[in-house]
Image (cartoon, rainbow, N blue to C red):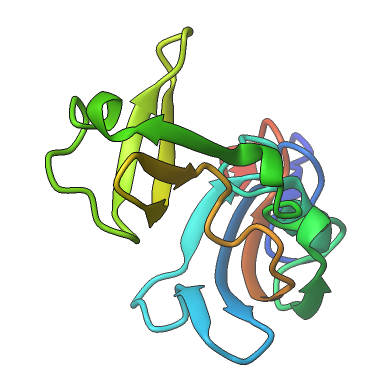
Length: 165
């Protein structure tokens, strides 16, 4: 008879880089306004730690947790979507901007392409007769956030689930 090894990723397996994690999360502003939440969904979401689907600050909160754990964390702007940066404000002439949008309005989201063909989203923040001001900061830049999680399952890196050998 051969020995069998039983790996149960639901018990003592802790979250590390590369772990596959099933969880519910909520991100809210300090005033309680919910930005995103999966708690109302039928099933938790699954993500791989380190695949850049979450910002590093959010992933840091998850490190070393295991199935059944819950956590709430206050994240400063630099741990979330960074500080607001005045250098991310750009001005375009109305003529130049007409190539992008005919009738720009404050609050309108616009997309630009950089030299590397990457998409850069921005928000129109001011308009006058001559110029359109676009803010390329993330809309949550400069905001402190509250992050809540409930962990349902942690699968170690390189393991696809329960494994009998």
